[in-house]
Length: 284
Image 1 (cartoon, rainbow, N blue to C red):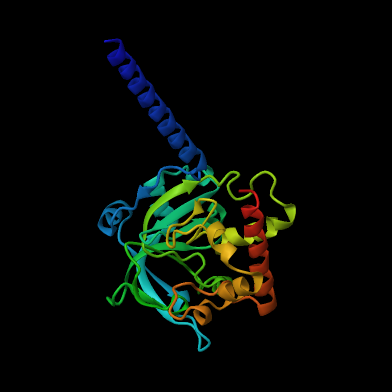
Image 2: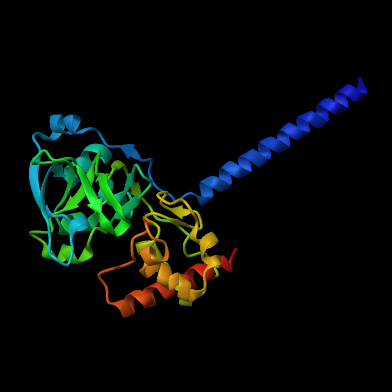
């Protein structure tokens, strides 16, 4: 009996230990997860029509199709983005976080500051007005006939031509969920980070974590942590990979970084990101 009781006590202690470890893992994951409100699925166009009325026609220069030969005009059907966001998140979203997060079916994440919606006209579109397939070619990522639905965030870059220079940076497609985003805390700028790496960190947030992760924070389109990848590169190879990914790996879906900037600035930016990632690795 004493042996049985002792065994039971050991088993109970093991269960308690396992529970404690599990709880620590849950707490650790919660602490590491980027803080944001729970993502909410976007309703279908029919449900939005019931709330907002008939869609509008929005003519834009399609940034994914821009080339040296000029711009391509396409007319989409959709609704003012702020009206759809109000419908899904309520009218307090402007003060609920530092950005609005648009999460795509393929894991891509785009975050837009609320003030941008005051500065420019944004639309959530769901179809082509001419009835053509709701797809787009994306030559920068060696992709053709990419589905844009369920929703595509488009900007009026005809009335606001300053937006043309941005390319497709703020044009996420396949958007299925939105939420308010409150920031990454110390994940991307942890205590002890070399101050000389901060500029590279800002560039990495802009250029990398829409698709990739850094220290667990970012998108899931290509769910690899760049802190695990950068160790395989020297600076010269890293810069070439960011600037000419198709030359390094033909057919890759990786787009060239900041293609509209001058070559000298692009190279400097890629080097700054390399410095930042290695500074982050040194803190592991």
